[in-house]
Length: 145
Ligand SMILES: [Cu+2]
Image 1: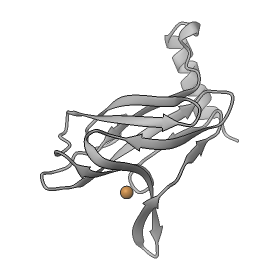
Image 2: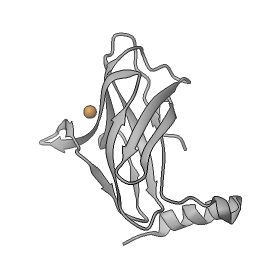
Image 3: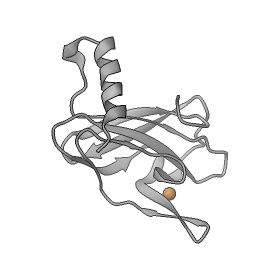
């Protein structure tokens, strides 16, 4: 098991903040891709870190900006990219899940308005143990650096 990237990230966080503010449990960030007028679906990508002592599971996503949202996984099959519902995703303790184009993504269906670059996408993410988090994801062309 390779824990180095997470440990480095954790060490950087510990250096920057008092020990009492060190992350525990699950942290979530992410971004969403802009869409154009007339585009009814879009995608958002989450970065989930599990600092807790036990595994947790991403069980649901929802957004007031779309009539339906769900986690999908894209996979190349015979040179063709297909996506299907991912089902609950388990994040083991000490692990990080990074969603990205052509992999796991949050599929937004029935967008009520275009996702404009520079605006925010409200998204609620539910974990089996950590419970519900409400995020305001930046809308931009590519993942934050
Ligand atoms: Cu999808």
